[in-house]
Image (cartoon, rainbow over all chains, first blue to last red; front, top):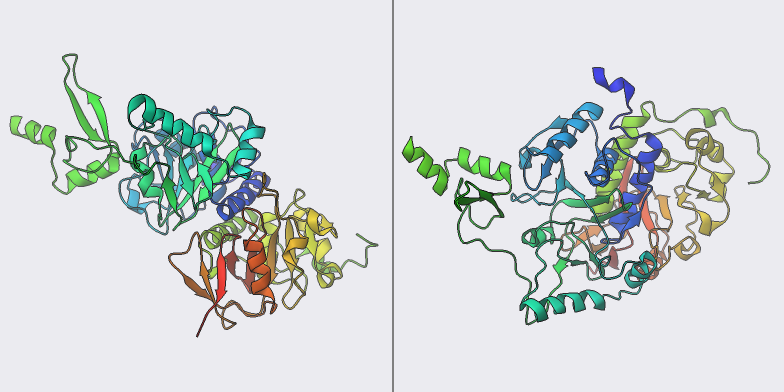
Length: 292
Length: 206
């Protein structure tokens, strides 16, 4: 605990934590509703996950094990910085293994492994208002939520179909929570939307710049908006992961050279590593081994 | 509030020995309990507020209340050293105007006012509603209710003991106001059971 002296535990002062904690409790009581909170300046710019960081700081305790992912990966800049931040200001145990974590802070993915009751997923949210690009005025969007007036969102999805023949929204795909509030799931790929539905884990969302916190309790209805004749569908990939051979997971495209070479690999690095440790091998890995 | 009566020495003692970690522990218990309505959850820390406020309710007050959260207290609590204790340890102002209160504390056996007398939030800002911390005799052994809603897998049975007979009616009215409404934290000793406004309750048919 040598480095802790200059900070309060988990960086935030206790009054700020109380304010955020009260907002979290109300957010849980009203699933999908965005609770305004007095977002603080954090020692990182808005847009780097200050909302998620404040939520994590307010709930974090000495017994927690923290995992941070950025687009599914534990080892990219945002994830590494935030993990290091909490190691420094809270001396908290960290992990990259999904199943060992009690709190998982995420930027735009939900881990492939099914989350359990002891876990809390904290999302970093850039723009919490799903109606914002349809109606820029906060006074109006607030009224639309109050009156449950979501026709505009359906018009937007319909226009997608009229122009493209299908709903073109592939990330931040709007959901309806418990039959009441339309909610932005943060810019996760729509592939992850079904994982939010009836999850065992508590899901908390923090938007630092926009100063909103919202929540989806466990065992809560989360339905992606769609039409009877254009039902919601998740992305499908033609090939399995090139490294671990996993199917039915979300894949990232990796460009290999300037001659059009590319491969598709798991976006969830922990899931991919775990599979490879258990002897699964994808096309690229098999080829590499054969070459050696 | 009215003229200060003699402040008992108990007003200055009985807060958390380790405020940072004990309030974190209490909050996490409340968060889990609110996310999983009907689950009996130990707070993991307790306070020693002046009687008749209990150890669990005191710990919740220290965890959630401060100068931004007016608190409403029952007559029995107002007449005790509790207002001074709340003021000294949490800087929380006590109000006798029910709709102004963000938190409401009711000691075990105290009269529970109608929920709609407190802030219910507005349609635009349903979060601006009161949270009621109600101490009861026990979280088990009372009349059985079937609870359902977000946070509950299918259904769960709760049996809090010591709620007013009219509770189910009051709760149904509160539930019908969604997204407005109050949220409840039922406390017995240092265990809690939360009922957010989303939880539907019905009497269990035997």
